[in-house]
Length: 593
Image (cartoon, rainbow, N blue to C red; front, side, top):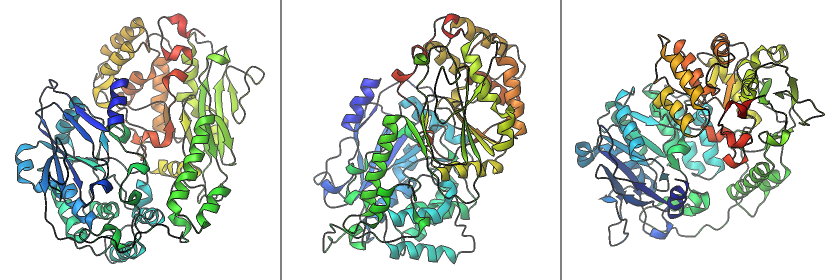
């Protein structure tokens, strides 16, 4: 599978096999590409479609003589909009108006032309089927800046030259005249969506969106206006069960056409006339600090400050290069850097991780800490003192449990870290992270999550597991297949659960490798205590995922979900870098403490 994925990525291809799938739906993909120079268009995915149940439609102005696109059925349009971008948004939001798709498509997947889908036929079909169980008949992903709202998005658009000031200002001015405008309206990703072509809600919102957008009076960016219309109609889309990166691959910015999607005048998006003068360079315009991108190191990186004032280069190119270099450095060092930034309403943040064993060389690689903030603390539950294992930046919580399994020791801090008196007293929010995982959050994002925990239903966040809808029983199958536990333990867990009257083998799964919670959350305390009462007996599986899902279902609790995708907040190491025989086990001896 890895070789196949590498081949498809190299070819920028999407392969759909002709598999046998129960309750097969008819799937339609829609994408859009407009322009007059094919070389300047985004790279369109290569199709290897072997299924008669999947169709691909491309909205474009270019016929087959001008641009050959094997596998795509073209929908040639002859709109008179002056902006090329407006042309490309019609199929995105109003593709459902196509009579052929209304008749023949059970579900429509819109994907930006530069994005490579990574779904197989079964996953596509599962999503299509599940759309009928959604509130409004369409799925989106949560935007990484969702909670910052429309006004923050306009700031980022301005900073990275995704539109011109005149248009951005016009959009804000118009929205501010609307009585239902909320600058903090949440954002949802528009680069990939799935919907039922007959969804009345999607039709209503997209029609209202188009009535304004197609006038070409203000910003050509669709993200803020779409968020505005969702808020106007009091609609929150259902969210894909899978993370964005599990379903779609976005190309590197250097592979984008259209000047890397940077714009300096209306000429850059004009459909029918070429730009009068090619734009080679543009001075960086000073901007308000509220327009900083989420990844910036305000006051923390001298080279970034220099880039902001460099008169000969664009802010986007410098900012991107510097941030990429910083991220590459941190990744190489497997480091987590927290700068001492000024953050409004600063909370006290605590990280918790666990590592147990007797041979340091066999432990997972612990992240290197570069912590410059007095508001963030790191606690490590372990059996190893400083003489045995030096862990700069981590405050150790040395335990002397008598559990026979090493894994049981490591789960105490994970689920019961809130019992620590020091953390109860000094931590506004606790982030648990497996010791092998590298956080990628800045102080502002950490603080935003800590603050938002108080607005959640139960006081804790998790990510949706990629096999969430397959449930506990499927998870046990994967555990067995990949040797994450031994058959004896797996069978014992299933046997015990089947004796419980509230057992549901399809109970949804949520990722346990990283969580955030309020130490005073009564719900988290109740569920984690119940979990521990069973888990600590060491009678069955040492994998915590199925039992945690069981306990959440027992208490009828669905965790609130992080607004950000898993990969935006955390980086998981390559499996070869795991300790403990790559976390594969063949007997109880493999986990004996």
